[in-house]
Length: 231
Ligand SMILES: [Ca+2]
Image (cartoon, rainbow, N blue to C red):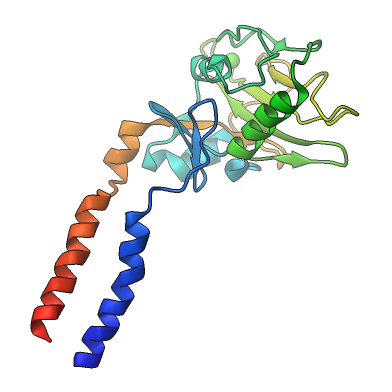
């Protein structure tokens, strides 16, 4: 029995060390960080777009709606693109929430290339790549509110498009109108397109409560003390 208790104690040591470490996250200028496949913000968090690549709005909501995820609205997507630090600095357009307006940046004047490449790569690594070809790794996601009730939704795009300078210099970032691409309805699916799912951080905590690290730490310490007294 003593040997078993010693083994349990030894097994608890790495757990305690793990809990003592801060959560591992890749913080970037936007204030978002990646934990698992969730892009975490302070108010909203996004499911990485590559997770739902190949799914339709209907199938994605069927799979993830029960744990608090909903389809990103036009306003939420515009707010994401407008948030400081999310897009490279040279994309100075003010993005709007009108589902019938096609928005993109064809002509840009990049600033410091290294800074812009870093911002671009941060976005792609956060939200995940849904399509890769020989010259570019891109991410796309269907979203929208369909306030005009035509059954059509919008598409957010973020293309890597490496040119000779290593930066995105052309038709790279955009929010489509709901009729830019034909047939973008709630059952449409493509392996190159994800579904933009978002949820309130509070909703996640309600659906999937995560024990506070301090509680787990106290529990483990209590077990160690208990075992010590029993040996
Ligand atoms: Ca619509």
